[in-house]
Image 1 (tube, helix red, strand yellow):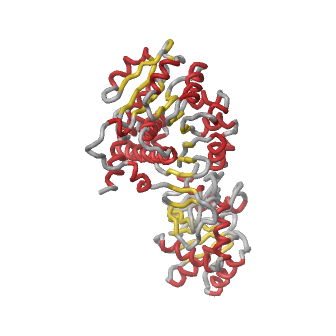
Image 2: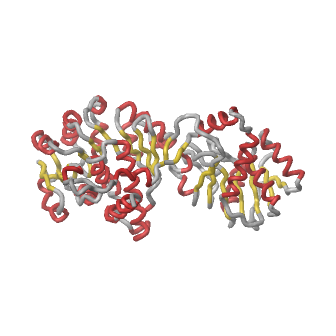
Image 3: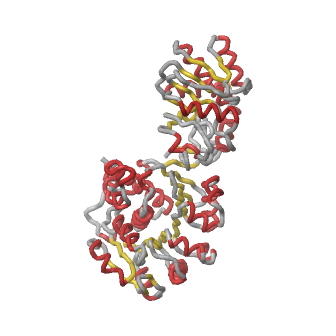
Length: 498
């Protein structure tokens, strides 16, 4: 579990560290030293500096390179310095390190390594003027690019930008920020590492979860156990137009790859003949339908709910008033874990919010940004600009666990915020969300902590996707490839006990 601090939390943490007796000048020196410990430098080196403390880190790097007799040149956007930065710049100047002022037609041709120290994590807005020209020149170079703290131009809280430095490695200082992971971040940095310089969070941080955080979810199974020990669950979904969705969810959990004991696959009765070839270990539960689309039937739902610890609702289920009635019934009467996904989220957006806020079920919602937009009546741009805050606020207001899908998944119960960074471009294909719902509903059948179950499901789904992409490539892989790799992730988790 790795701490991730918002930009504001990082600012407060930095200030508290300084107030506690470690000077800003000392922290700046630690930052520059730590960056060099994490990168391999080839000469000649260009250190491109803006005007704030991020530039000061660059001046420290220049001084340390000078002491190692590695040729370097400082490039300045403006002759303006922070107080601590000015101290180290003066040392650079008196040490004879070349200083060049950037110009409109600048090129970094001939430099083997470039340190990007233009903007820090506090940057927001658009990159304009000379800064834009310099960033474009860095991106056109053939040099090995090191971004110090964060890629200049990238927003530290949301990972958005109009233009930013594209780095080979980004070395975060003191703590990761959300902008190192969210939205565009993965397309801007090949590698990201953090260096600890003695700053501790002033406020509770977010958490980036790692495989070891889910070790306890896959304990060694006892001989004295049976299928009910590991939970009964149900998947409700499918329609004539989207019969594949429920089949993918079934592939992810009906074969018990994610650990469920028994799975009931509830689908339109008229489509069950299509599903039978997929059904080996699980139980098929035909549901009343009309022309391949589910219709509300209280007795059928009540019969399905009995004895199952978790239900996933919505995968390819279609959009109709009948679906809304089914979901409303579940919210009013079900008391287990209820995962609402895909079309189920569209149905939820049309219901009275009070049903969600007053349900006895433990609800987990799994929207992508467009679906979350419908739930919140906010634009996708608003959500992308503040995804963590909006997800946390919605979860708190509606007493749910929210799993907001994206390049890095955000999972929150309204208090804690977890980030899961697994996944790959090849998962941008139809059905990936259905696989996630199958994994999640299986975990919910035997993991009582909904936040942990949702976080683990996101991790397993993303890691399985990574394994699938290794086999088939990002263009050719499909969602069923991800489902087929779940067993490999579970095996890796289980191996942590060895």
